[in-house]
Length: 135
Image (cartoon, rainbow, N blue to C red; front, top):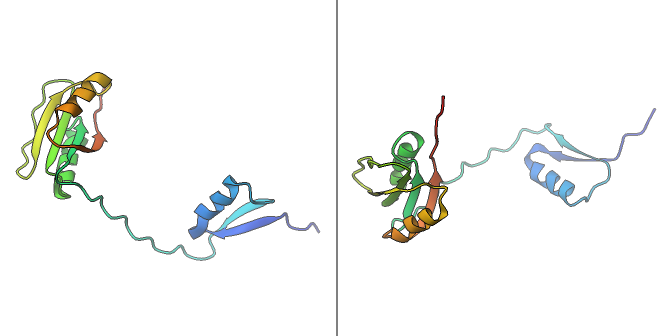
């Protein structure tokens, strides 16, 4: 009969600790993750606290994910939203939010610097929702 290889066990709830041991090479043998105990329930993360005096920039914000993001940000307290797209933009109507549109290519650094410089309120967040569907 052979002896067991050197190992160290971690319950699934402490998997980040196990990776820390691996990352810092503080082990000999194997690291084993066990599922003998049920994982503890983890509280849902709180939604971010948004600055009502800041601007939140959304690329591709006139439809799809971008438009849904306007609603999501507004529901969490955003008051100023900037939409950026390559073509002429029509801002979605939202009663509780000031929406400003900018025609710019997000891959053009100088154009984006100008967009940020033109904002009336400080930039507090960016959601990149632009896409190009080419079927």
